[in-house]
Image 1: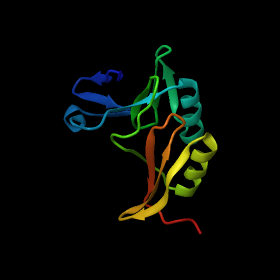
Image 2: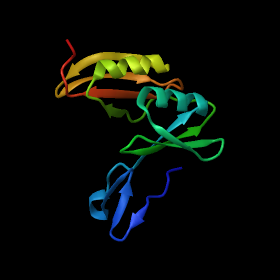
Image 3: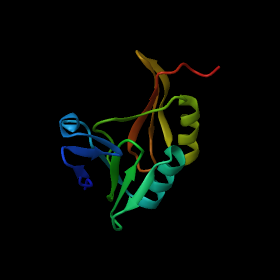
Image 4: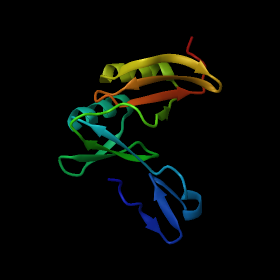
Length: 139
């Protein structure tokens, strides 16, 4: 379950950013994933992306990536599909290496698209995400 937004008079925190309520309206505020093994999931996202975590009992943990909050809900089985969450990086090759070393599986190798390049991976539970960059390949 999402964490309630922290609010002040006329403004609300989305992630770590304080913004006027009007500017916060209709923006993605929280992303929730499923996971079968919360400790393994925490280890993967810490190693690959440096995310911070807060436990809310044995069935749920929240994460903070520095801009967006989200969570992982414990389930018996993860089903692929649904919206694709995309993470930005300035160094696509470096982050692809980190994802592999942390235990992720690359399901779509780096490819160009109008505006940049990206790859897609699955985490150890099978959730599929993508990473993109607007920077050219390293030489």
